[in-house]
Image 1: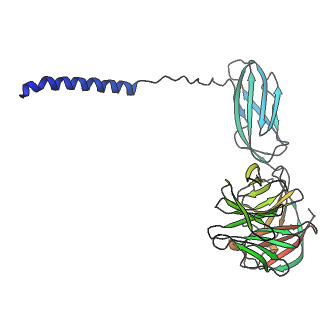
Image 2: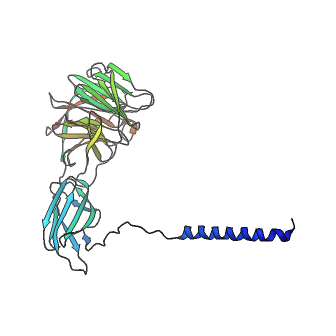
Image 3: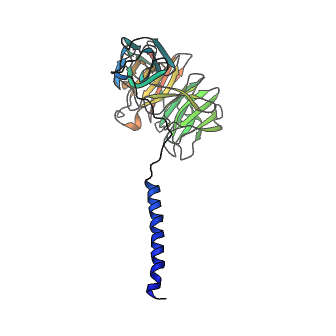
Length: 368
């Protein structure tokens, strides 16, 4: 076929391709219409408080709202924090206050809604930081007795029950759960964790020992007499540190300023608090012990124990155990204070630390 006969066919093909490309380009750039209803602009704006305003528990905060230039008829203002909602019937945006009394300490979000013109509303959210208004009470202590302790035990959790001491130790390939004779420091019974687990806090709940792990997000339940493992459980909290119980829920720390309340059957979180004193948050909460409505907590790397109100998160007391530290242990994170157990019969505490050679029985004053 000659070149002249090919030209008409090539021309037709080029025209068709050009039309197809034009349609494709038109489809690509064709704007899409949306049926999504755009939110109406707010008629009000929040002037104060500003985000992360720091107040003390019990303080009142002035809520300053502006209606701008558009006249509106205000019906009411509601202020919600957590499960608490306060509705203020008002015809004005002036002289609005929110009281922190009744709240928990820590980070708190105010959700402010303005209802106006019968059926309209605006929403504003602002975060506040609530410090405790209490100056923590200082507790002193008296040493009742000193006992031997395994100085190779990397103590992570401690529980006293009817003359026996239950102890959890940590580190990969060295973690264990053990029953210890207090008088001698000897192991009465011990089970080792699988080498991939780093043992952490323990607590006694309904004749069973619950033990959590550091970063595995796995815990174990044991028979308290035989230490035979009954079951394991998973949890979503990033790290396991300390563990105790209030008799209803387990209470768990993760090395932050938060304490988590856990339902013990399925290990689901039901509540949490942040721990603050009058200066700020108390982070690195570690080993825990629940005593007479209060939570005692080691602060990792520190020589003191804080006493916490579990309802509010406030630090109500503090005791410094620096004089119990073994020689050369200060500043050594392999030998930090870590271990609190309670004898309800005497009201005494059993105190030790990681790789400490001694366990101390002490009495706090004033008594808990």
